[in-house]
Length: 174
Image 1 (tube, rainbow, N blue to C red):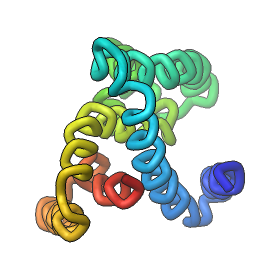
Image 2: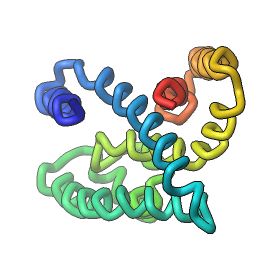
Image 3: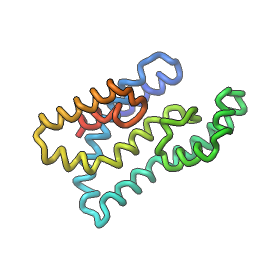
């Protein structure tokens, strides 16, 4: 199922036929489910749960994003992409956002375009332990109300590619 979703996203990026957003939203819901599960079964039992969790999550994403960035940035120049000058104008911001993953979705140009979703994932990982505690203690109706409140917030303030725009999908998975 995840492979099929990934192939739909790749198809979206290769053809520009707008079919890629729905699978990404499903990935966010699956991530909410999976993170909730592994937090309770694995990370919550460690000596430093949040630190262990964040390092583990970062280690799964950052090396691949850095490698992809190292490949994509020179390709911008080779292909005479107009965004190459934007990348060159903000090299430290580009490097920090790729290394830390945080802030990548808000870059003026992203050499690895689809990596915005990794930034959203990392933002979710930061607050996931709090959400998990809330989900476990609250009635499902309250959790649903919280998700609706997040959607309304996003609609009112158009947060863009930030966590509030997608938090309700993670919460559905949880």
